[in-house]
Length: 181
Image (cartoon, rainbow, N blue to C red; front, side):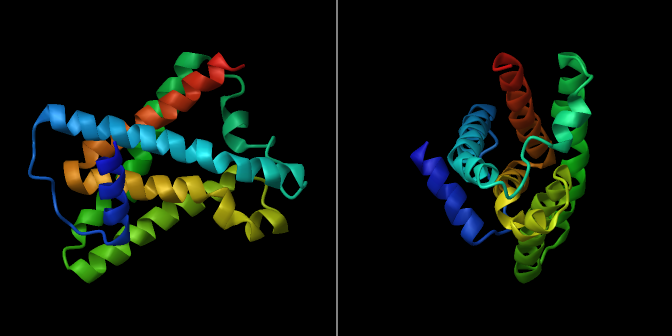
């Protein structure tokens, strides 16, 4: 786990367009599940920032667009939309194009740009106020980091793996939301 985390951090510091030569499914699923755990832990570690923002009254965290979208859906509908359709669309848009940038300098710019775009598009989940805009880097920090994680697995293993990772991440959150309701 530690090695995967360190490899991920090293990659995020200097992303390169290089597929992983190890095509063993056992190896790939091991790395996949480790990155899924890292993704989930990232959200848990960052969540106190959101509690502070809400406690200070800076942003209404209860009025989240995703919750409103899922409000009248059953778990199957939520799962199909949130864990299958949305990840497939978002990964095609935000991770699909990054491998088209072949020159190292342009690839690095594209990798970071798509991670940032992925993160900042999620600001629309909040009511847009001055505070929301000012705090937007913090509010979308989990999505920016996830954009990097998903980008890493996309480049190393392929687009289908980033779709799967994104879907499993969202699916885990959907299932946890039902368990803790």
